[in-house]
Image (cartoon, rainbow, N blue to C red):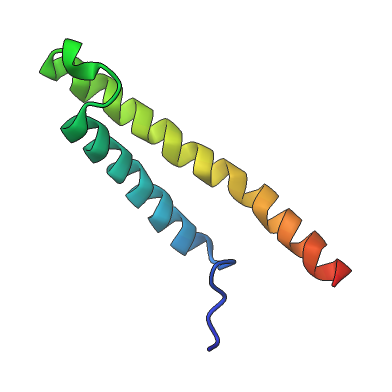
Length: 78
C-alpha cells in the first residue's frame, strides 16, 4: 500500500476535498435547515449559505500548512 492517506501532500487533492466540503456544507444547510434558517427567504438562503460554505472550505484550506508543519515535526521526532 503506497498511498499516503491520510497525510496526502498533493495540494490538488486537498483543493478537491475543500471544494467538496464546501458543497456538502451548502447542501446540508439548505436541505436540513438546522440553524433556524427557515426564517430566511429563498433569495436570502442563496446569498448567505454559499458564503458560509465558502468560509468553511477556505478555513479547511488555510489549516493545511499547519497540518503539514505538524506532520513533518512529528515524523522528525520518531
